[in-house]
Amino acid sequence: MKRTTRRRIAAFALTTMLATNTLSGMVMPASAASVVTLASTSATKPATPSGVKVSVSYPSKTKATIKVSWNKVSGASGYQVMTGGNSKMTVDDATYTTTGKSKSLSYTRSKKAFTRYFKVRAYKTVKGKKVYGSWSAVKSVSVAKKKS
Image 1 (cartoon, rainbow, N blue to C red):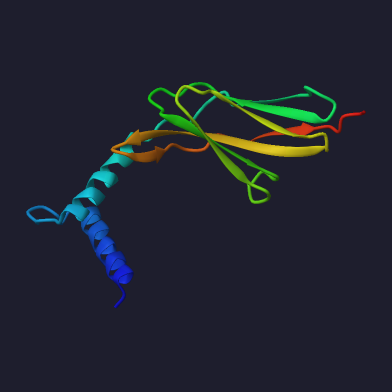
Image 2 (cartoon, rainbow, N blue to C red):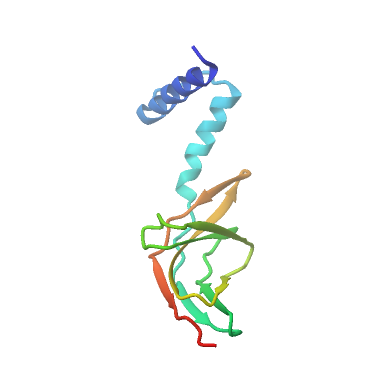
């Protein structure tokens, strides 16, 4: 049996024991203890960002700048912004990560007309791992082609 298959079986057995509370009195290796601590951090997810707004400006004849902004989430280490070409984020999607106290992201494109969709979520760092909150509602913006 491959090593990865054995690890997956062991991880499945451990999560089953965690779900049924059959771990009491057992001696666990250090790798299993880290799985237990990661499972207990899921309750500390950050809140969903509120007040997500998307605006567009035209700083020049050839560029359109989209600004995505949101309200600060208490205890968040940073934010992740996903953008896509449709509301389900399955076409031309990309993810941008901001850190610290940033509450906005600017996105610049050429003068071509397009519609973009955005959603935001907060994350916090717990024991060196990023714990993500839920995504906000999807917001869209339509950029008109600039006349030269």
